[in-house]
Length: 359
Image (cartoon, rainbow, N blue to C red; front, side, top):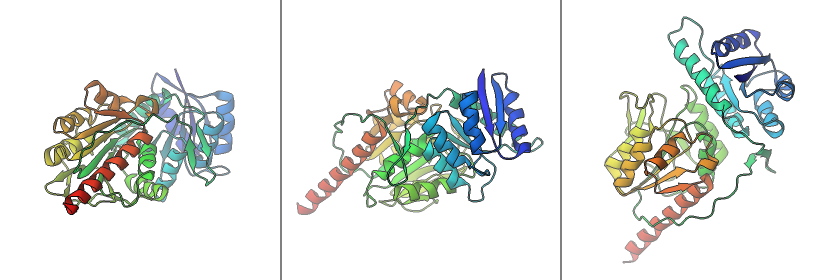
C-alpha cells in the first residue's frame, strides 16, 4: 500500500485530492495538512511514501517546504498546482529544490477532462512513490541548488564535423537535467537546440521562463516556420509536435499523438533523422515509457551521434533505458558528460570551419 500525504491550504481541495487518491486500491492517504510547517512535521511522524504539494500556502509555502523536506526527510514530492497565475515558474523552482513532477490540479467531476486528469495524477503518484530519492539537495553559496552526484569518467566522443542540430527529448525528471546541461553550455553555443519535454498543459511558459532564468541560456517556445538559431534552445509548445524541415526551419504539427503524447520525442527524432541525417546529435533523457527510443535508433542508422542518459542519474530510466536495450544509443552518459560532449562537438565544428576558411 502506498502511503500518501496531501498538502494544500484549502480544505475543499484537500478533500478532493484525498478522494481521488483513496479511490485507488493501492493508495492510502495517511494525512492532509494545510501548510509547509505542518507538512514537515507530518513527514517526520507519518513517513509517507509520496507527497502531493501545493505551492501557495500560508506560514510556509510549498517551495520552501520542498527544500526543507529534501534536506531533512527526503520523500518523493509531486507538485499539484491549481493556478497558472504566476505559479508555473515557482513550480519549477520546487523541481529545482527536489520535487519530481509538476501536475495541474484535476478539474471537478462533470468536466470533460476530469477522468483523464485524475488518472494522470494517480499514475504519477504511484510512479513517483517508487523513486528512491536521497538527501542530495543543499543550498549552494549563491542560493541555488547543488547535487552530490558522482562524476562519471570522461568519455571519448568520436569527431563528427558539420553538426547542424542538437535534438533533446525528456520526460519525468527532465527539467532539472535540462537545467544542468544548458547551464554548462556557453550562451554563444554555435549549434541550434530543439527540446521536447513532456509536461502538463499550461506549464510550458513557466518552464521556459524558469529554465532560461536559471541557466542563463537563451530559451524560447518554438514557433512554426521560424529558422533554427544557434545559441538558442527552442522548446515544443503545448499540444504541438516539434520537428524540422529542410534546410533549417522549425515545424509544428497537430498530427495525432505518438505513444499517447503530443508533443512526442519520437516525432522530433524521426524528423531530424529525415532532414539532417548524420549531421545531428540526439539526446534522450530521463522519463517513463519509451517515447523516442526507437527513433533515436533511426538517427543512429543515419549516422548521427546518439546519447542516452545513464541509469544512475535518471529519475526514471524508462525512455533512455529502452534506447539502450534497442542499441539506439552510441553513448550512455551522465548529464555532466552529456554537456561536456556537446561542448566538445561544437568545438570540433568550429575547428573544421576554421580549416575550411584557411584552406
